Amino acid sequence: MRTIIRNGTIVTSRDLYQADVLMEDGIITGLGKNLKIEDGDRIIEAEGRYVLPGGIDVHTHLGIPDTVDDFESGTRAAAMGGITTIINYVDPVRGQSLLETLRVWKEKAMPSCIDYGFHSIINECNERVLEELPLLADKEGVTSIKLFMAYKETNMVNDLQMYRLMKKAGESGILTCVHAENGDVIDELVEEAVAQGRLAPIYHALTRPETLEAEAVNRALRIAETAKAPVYIVHVSCADAMNEVGQAVERGGHVYAETCPHYLVLDQSYLELPDFEGGKYVCSPPLREKWNQDKLWEGIASGNIHTIGSDHASIPFEGGKTRGRNNFAQIPNGLPGIETTFPLLYHYGVYEQRVSLSKFVEITSTNPARIFGLYPKKGTIAVGSDADITIVDPARSKVISHRTQQQGTDYNVYEGMELQGATERVFSRGEELVSNGLFVGKPGRGQYLHRQKISPSDALKRGMIK
Image (cartoon, rainbow, N blue to C red):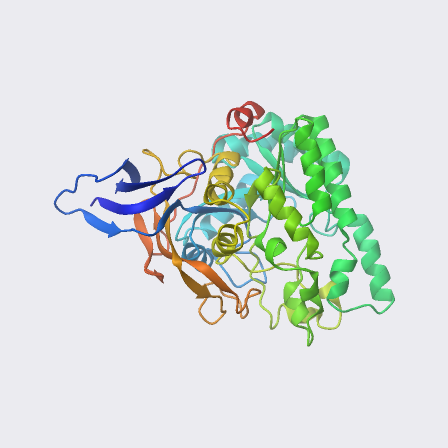
């Protein structure tokens, strides 16, 4: 059956115009005013609404231990928030083949309601890993990996390992994502604080200062330049770290940066809430002083921040965060946010006039698709692209509450915020998942995405670096 979305305002990363959208067999097959209607067509009136490319969340942690969202509940929540594609991180198992680990995660993801891909986290560097990297891209279409500069006990790699992995990844058409914090110094600061009895949640932020994020970002970027490899800095939280990205871009590096909604909306003061409420807000990098928010918004507008990722980690409060009630160092890191990323960015970005509608589409959909090898299949409204579409009613508002959310946590870090602009309908490959604000999709319909390889020349043609 054909579906026509009529009389809406179509928004892409470059254009904003009135037109109808024709969807057929999962693909956009027509754009224009007053498209011809045939018998049996489904007509959706979108006058006064924005018709946007579905959001792409390239930073999710569904299905990890000690969290409550699997791929069914997590992707249902994503769809309710206007997200039609995710790229989830694959947790590694030391000594296990990268391909075998990926196979396990592909099985875990089968209940997904929306389309999905993977990044492979790498926490060791040896001949087996280096030999397998090209196979990730060639056989499985996994064209991004993630390295950690922190968490020594589980994931941290040293500088030499990072160089070798980046170099091999770059040669294989793979983008290296980096969690950039100076883990060695942070571990020392945490030990000092605990020894001094400084145990409240605010010390999570005070032991992970901005300087140690900025230093690690600079180091990662310089190593990537030496390796001649593309690099993507995840969850940039502060102005100092973003400035390091900007300088690398000016040097001509193949560099991208992501921030998260919580760094744009929340600040360090939330960690000081009484009665251990501050424990809900522990994430890494931590929330920063409020003045950083304006700088990050400026970075989005100027192009030094390229994407937004939720960094969704659905750690419950009771039995999760509360494990660190008497010691901040024992609070599990991570915030739930897959359902609110799109609405938060619309309200605080578009409605409050920090960014244009086209910039909103660029950072939530088009840039993620371009950077991670999904464009033009995803990330735009164009003839031949997947019919992934989110319709937003700018005249309606919605109050965030954990009581009405789809994500599984027993709290919401944005509780009580009233956001202007409501997600009204969501389509994934032409199939309606959200109708008038209600989820109507089915688990298991999501498709695995085999992504294109990454190359510096592609980035230049796509206009992604200055």
